[in-house]
Length: 380
Image (tube, rainbow, N blue to C red; front, top):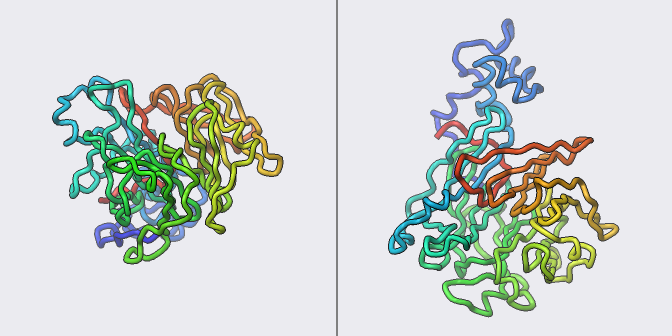
């Protein structure tokens, strides 16, 4: 994906030769010391000395990965004047630095047009309004949400590039929508079904794509093969991209559901394999578009899909994974939002035995969605 900003002169000042006048390793020039230190773990660099810590966060050091979350305020903070709800943005964007274990706010999104995203509506706090976002080519992409007037909140995708600390917009939607199916395969974003300002059967059956690998001036939405019917416009759907296909079900949880598969290369819809559909019992995500993981929100079982046998293989089952609401996968780890967004459980699926630990969101906040992306630049 083309990223808009180019490093400024101020940013370039933080090159390896300009990390103060301190030497990183006595007796070695900094550029050679950098080669030696690049093989060490980020946590070690952080803990040894200030000069190594500055190296860790410089543009000369490969960015480590962090957890990014969209947060909704506590219930009592949502009890606002209903007449003013369409003028507020009730969502915050934060990143967890895994090395320093600190939460950091992302820069404010563009104010023109102002962002009005509502997750909880004051007059019916028991109902959450979905906010749909993706991870595409190391960008956070905000795709769909609802305003206080119950209309689509976004007229075009909103992207954040962590390594540049920069927000920018994607191409305008042909029809802004919410309650849609969103996903990506190989850097191409797909948007299917959903509801605009009013329900339309044509919109509910539509499918479009945006190739982020094109130059920005060529960005646009292209119409693709339509869905068979509009049953995917009833919920916010995760379209999980894996091995050249998008996989999606039309209902969350353990309810009876339909499952469809979109073949990217053939531009056609297929039925989901029976074994995959039978075990799709909660939120799902893909690891590097190679393996799909799902969490059974009733049993608390994390499983991975075996495409050759058309079955799900259980990785681990834990009480902490019950009531799973969303998952993100990357860098060998599956991160699960549980307990009404009040807990994040991390499962390292690479190690044996499987390692599990919890991450606490900022106090009093509810996690709406989460992503695994490179750490934010410390330069604005």
